[in-house]
Image (cartoon, rainbow, N blue to C red; front, side, top):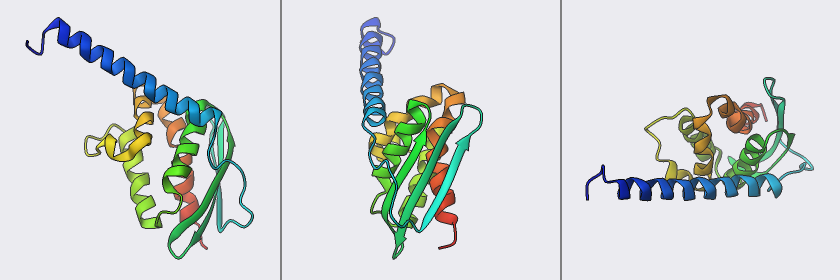
Amino acid sequence: MTADDPGRRADYARQEAELDELYRDIILDHYRHPRRKGRLAAPTATHEGLNPLCGDEVTIEVIVRDGRIQDIAYMGSGCSISQSSASMMTEAVHGKPVAEVRGLIADFTAMMRGSDDIDPESLGDLEALGGVRKFPVRVKCATLAWHTLDEALAEPK
């Protein structure tokens, strides 16, 4: 059997379709059942992000103590991609050292730009958002919360 074999191409196409469906399920689950959505009682930093092209909004609140994200929450409205990405991001960074979070922000945004230097599998469930790259106009939706978190982390404490 060669790489050009119709059976192999059909198997590959089926696997890709199943993976796309799994990723859609992950994104929709975070949209329908958001994690860490709400407000924090006493955030050390708060930043608002807006995508004026489509109207997506997100506000990130964090509590940073001893160089670690002790708690994080978001509020927002917009498309399923922007809100799912915010939910997935808050889960991914909660409890992590700020330095590690900055690396994750860089890796996620690089993946969304299509960088070959990032192994998407190293991002866990965040890899599900990688399919958004097929729709360049939606990349800003997926990265809105990430840029907003980066800006919140840059605020003076």
